[in-house]
Length: 441
Image (cartoon, rainbow, N blue to C red; front, top):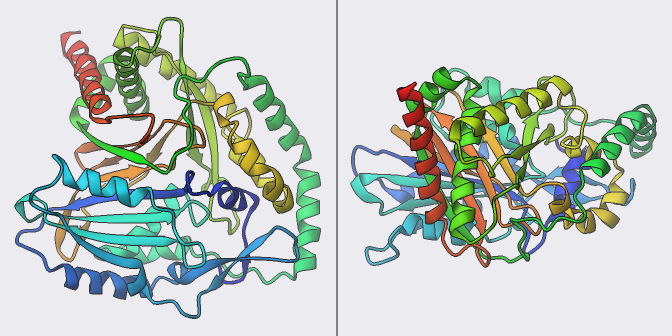
């Protein structure tokens, strides 16, 4: 990865970066320690492990040739300890001090002059629990790659080294001229695919519709954490069909419906369009940090019946899967991959602010292993992923299935959303309504 050229999509995430639009992913991970932990010891342990992960010592350097491009290069002054911080929650603080602190943490952009990641060890939670707050720039990796990095920070498991090795691409030994020539050849061969995606994007755009979740950009963020019982989700699936992900989308749709009604927004005859990222790592080779496509799914918030909502989402997702992740309007990451870096430098920031014409929110599902994870012997109890807010968007949602729970991280525009608690309550109510229907059938 040292000296490796960033892909078009990686550069796009860099170009979207701004004080009010930070493009980093995050996770709030809570561990159940058997006794009080020493934060200094945890920080030292994490620094030692981070120092052994080559990717974490690399930063972005822009290139003169090819113009507008960028490469990953080793930071000669790298010190993992500078990326790791400690925080003790106070006793007299907000009702939910961890969520409040994490919201302040997530809204701060990363320093792109350094390797683009940060860790905070947070102590002071009840019952000896502690939290690890991890932040990675989206140019650095996607959700699947983020777990691979996190795996190297946690206690080692049999698959840890394999996962890390698989996400550590070989150094690109091509000359700048060879990169340009290869890029031109690739652009020509992919022109028809790119044209097809661009055409689908234009057809799917909604230029005359005021996006219901639109909001002016702001640095302020609010977070919310929701935990669902995986057994309940599987019961719903068994009774009404669909996949686990379909059920999660249906639960979120019901929560968004009630939340919009409580905010005085119209839901009759309206859908919310979600961009659902899809990993293409199994389909595409190559060293890019991000291997993503996406689906667009219209969430039927207009439907009052929770079972009909699930059925509608299941049909929509089946259509997406039948078409495949490498085409269609949701494949905007594939299109970004095919655009040269200079074009991204000129246009991506402007185009990004028109994202509301295509979708209202991003809902992503982060893959996690089924085995038990731990840090310094403390079992991982909860993990809430956080997806960056799209420009001019009020809400982004990320979910992760781990052990016996579905963990949902809500990230909201702090000026547009006064309280994420009401949305979290609505999601729980939506899950309960679907579950009740599943046990009564």
